[in-house]
Amino acid sequence: MTNTGVREWAQRQARTYSGGDDRPLGGYLKVIGVYGGIVAAATGLGRLTRRSVPTTVGPWDLVLLSIATHRLSRTLAKDPITSPLRAPFTEFEGVSAAAELKEEVRTEDELRHSVGELISCPMCLAQWVATGFGAGLVFAPRQTRLVMAVLSAVAGSDFLQYLYSVLQQQAGE
Image (tube, rainbow, N blue to C red; front, side, top):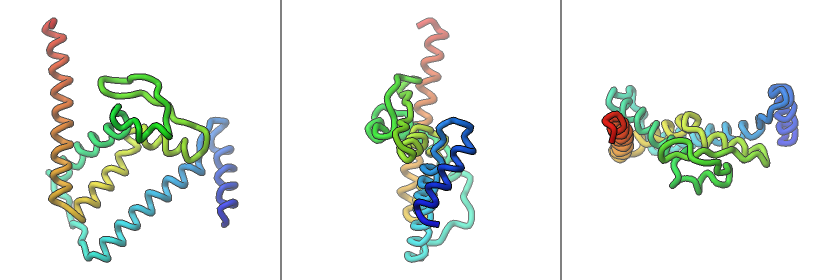
């Protein structure tokens, strides 16, 4: 199937699938292709460099991986400081929570729409972030654990900041 054939197929599927809503299936296919390409490249690089994949992921690595994935995904998708990375794909709408922005996805074209949905959604980004950390644990485990520990500490600090604010409000301060 040619690029034109794939594009036409995706547009036909989008019309049928969406029920009139704007669902950029062609853009989603491109994003999935990029993700698959990154995973394939990392796998190939691992084989070339004879890196072995761990047979198990220890419980502490899993805890660090989970918390760090949460924190980095939210930072990339919602933090004001990372808004220049999202700006080509989103439009500023306002503030959604403490230190977080609300942005609308740009819909000028399918790819911009698809990437905008991905990078403005912490849960959508989590798969990509966790995959990056997984690759980091294969290629540079010590450095990756340090980054995950720092991000986990930031997530813990965020929780304590919110808890402190709630306790201040309850105390009437």
